[in-house]
Image (tube, rainbow, N blue to C red; front, side):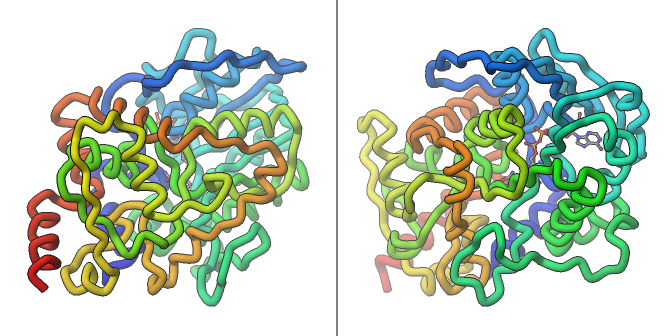
Length: 391
Ligand SMILES: NC(=O)c1ccc[n+]([C@@H]2O[C@H](COP(=O)([O-])OP(=O)(O)OC[C@H]3O[C@@H](n4cnc5c(N)ncnc54)[C@H](OP(=O)(O)O)[C@@H]3O)[C@@H](O)[C@H]2O)c1
């Protein structure tokens, strides 16, 4: 059966939305949540925050939350999506693939958030400049750093994937792109070590699980609200008991800013929700978020049957990993440390409604492209359901 890694490999080969380690919105302006914004209280002490990135998936939510909390925000990126930035943000430009980090020289920041980095030399380049100019470096990593082999659950102390190719700082963007699925986790882990080398114990490592919500062009969660909103008989994977973890990009973004305010150092998994969620819990939870005018029937099809019919976990059945998949343990990632450090979660329904609203707002061509990034094609779903009923 194709694995999550096969899906990553196929996405990388397809090019499209996949860039250096992140999947970003392809079109459209700032993700506009459909649910009503809350009052955001100001922080006790305003910070000077530098966000490396800032205009992709989580960045725009970090920027908005930081401004609402009264902080001064500077972003650094190549400028490809800066129409998403609100007023009051200072913009610096440079391409980290080309070592263009000189614009970061000559200023001090209370905290630096490094969002998009997978290549260790990206950390080294900014480390050389920023080491003595910031009191805190927050690195966005991933739960893909963990080596799932032989693990029954994941905590921050679980073993990490090693990088076995020599000096990881020497890995080029081209070499990474050519072998994305195999190198992503090991290079993220190597980048974490590089961060510690330059910033010592002033580092926070945040390891998110699957990031979802408005602005997510990967369709790896949005497929479900989209499919459920269409109604009818829906192919659902397994027996409903497999565990699922996701995190809304806004929860991740806002918590990251609060971690900066608290100067909370150390390593934290960022995976939701608070208490265990199963695949059935997720799908029924999403269904409950819609108004009930459409009839929805889930048909749960065992993993073995899906494998026989070439339905891939994670790719065609997004967010789902069957127990037989060696990587399925990543859906059992402990978030206890992050919860103790103030990570909070929006309701699943909010993520579902806002993700779908964002998807529907996209121009038709973008919707067509995003819709192909993950999920089961309608014809294949019909065919597999028919085969299941005829067995
Ligand atoms: N998606 C997931 O489910 C998931 C799960 C776990 C972890 N993660 C990690 O979470 C992070 C997600 O990042 P995000 O999209 O939320 O970050 P972001 O800061 O919102 O977006 C990526 C930023 O990086 C900038 N950038 C990209 N290439 C650059 C370059 N060569 N030089 C300078 N800037 C560059 C982009 O702007 P320009 O394009 O204009 O340069 C953009 O501002 C990544 O580190 C990813 O590995 C993702």
